[in-house]
Length: 416
Ligand SMILES: Cc1cc2nc3c(=O)[nH]c(=O)nc-3n(C[C@H](O)[C@H](O)[C@H](O)COP(=O)(O)OP(=O)(O)OC[C@H]3O[C@@H](n4cnc5c(N)ncnc54)[C@H](O)[C@@H]3O)c2cc1C
Image 1: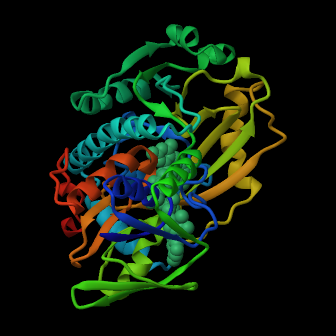
Image 2: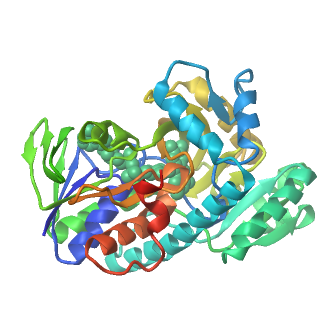
Image 3: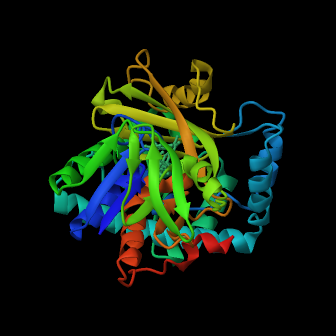
């Protein structure tokens, strides 16, 4: 079978890997000149079932409301005329109830844990390198009440098999010596020993090279302008570099997925939520964090990726605008200077922003589309690096008529 994969981000390239491994002919199309040049380019780097909580939660509406009059919040929402955002927002609100939040989190954490094992298997099989760290994640809490709530919330993930150890304030700096100078500022931490981190772009680019060796063809620098549908089949894909056809198609266009499927009658509730990252060269390895993690009070993630320190933060509901300026990074750099003042060369920041393809409930949209030869692998939101290998394995297994190893029915588009 010849399969055309739309998109060469994490989800598109991992899909190509699993298809090629099964001996299928694969063509991957992307408008960028290299794989992983959009959302998979410079994310936080965390592979973390321990951070699989669904964003739609009982606390979310108040956090969003507060962001209307405060500019320093991790979540930024502005009132504007954007029918897509309002339609998505209503579905998001409907998922904020406690029981929905719990159910969506459980669906996500099962996929994350499955995917972590698949990422390890792909790495072992292909031998690719991606600045992998297996130190486990450190979730830092500044306020005792927040720490108590964090521990209570974690029970849901622990029930799903995510292992965690609680570190009281006095144990923290022995565990993470780079925080010794801010000892009194933390109430404690949760350490999830099996969470991992690494460079998603390096992984994707290296996996694409491995795919090429298996015969996968990459049509890069080709923007898809139209998906052609005739009856219940896709007949081809038009690009600005010509038409491409196959027997089956997998859509992995991240935040841009709904723009191309709307004209063929598929409505996908994916909204682009902008996030920002800054990458700094490590200046003093001794002062750099040994663990990766999240400052939960500021919602700033940090990870050492080889000889670089990466910080990420912010969820900005700004439509398809991917622009950024130094002002967007002030908050995360302030946190980085406070936590790791000597670790990095703060005068050499590499800024970046991109769009998380968020579904209103949290789980991605995967599997059959309702159109006979079109498959979906999109909407992975804030945690698509963690979910990539597992998601693509599930989609490919289902495509090829194999029984997926975990239940894939919660990810169907038909749930909306
Ligand atoms: C700031 C930030 C931090 C994050 N941190 C983490 C983290 O720590 N852990 C984690 O698990 N996840 C994280 N994520 C989420 C993760 O990065 C995404 O879920 C993931 O990259 C999505 O991959 P994708 O392949 O679906 O999308 P993309 O990587 O965007 O791939 C889609 C591809 O489609 C192509 N494309 C789009 N339109 C067209 C077109 N018309 N024609 C041709 N090509 C097209 C694009 O060029 C792109 O290459 C983070 C995201 C952000 C923004």
